[in-house]
Length: 376
Picture 1 (cartoon, rainbow, N blue to C red):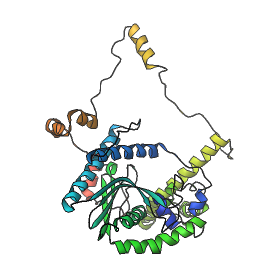
Picture 2: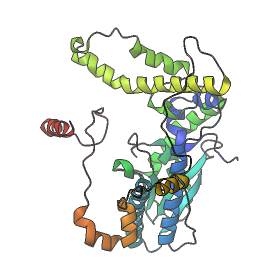
Picture 3: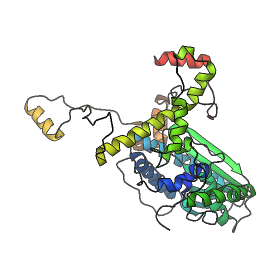
């Protein structure tokens, strides 16, 4: 096996819905985004902190991605996991804890393996916790293929030791204040593995099956120029638009349902075309490359400071208060809560119109109107 699974659990939702996307995507180079790098840094820190709590040997990682925001998100996740660890210790005399556990599911799909962020096994329960540090779209545990695959792999190992009755799957998204948990019986999970995962994996590895566009296209490497995705999005683009006030309520609802995917598709096509023009010197009919706007920068902050001071200017620095995460680390959590607890608050998030399938609780219209007016 290589460093990366060919049928990756993280891509399972897409590969189950659109099996040929695996082979189509293999002609493109792997993508490495700063968001993925930041996520890896956050997972490494979470692993260290949890192992430290478990009194396992570990070394604190170092990364340029450790911002106040990321550190606070990791702290929230670690606090949640520690709570689950202590609960398991009360329920079972000898629970098993594993951080960043490699999971192999090749019995169902060849070359299918991944890493579960946190695994807790008691005499009756397998609990898999997945940390997601993204700030974009909420992800939920219910029928989540990635976590179900992890569940199959861990269940196979756990049943050699315990008569497991329940598989619990949890997704924790601290930056979106989203925590989602779903439970499934072992026999139902295995049935899903046989009836859904196994046949989808067989088709995907061969590049067979039907192309199918949907929200799972987001991380597909072929998404930029996939014809099936273009067909689906052009259905909306070909709609004969009038002034918004003349559209019916049903028409506006249809636009809202598809507009997000349409805008993402258009942005992906644009990003692909721009990359081809800049990196591969491709010329697109009707387009050209230009220099974008930029801001002035100092060549050397040290030399600037020295020159300004030499000219008699002394008030050249700004002083800022430590962020909440750094302040809490400086004081310790108990002292921070005692001294500054009453001076810290968490503002409400920005009001957003989302599909009814979104699991966040709806707010009252009168409240939304009042808050919207405040934002203006």
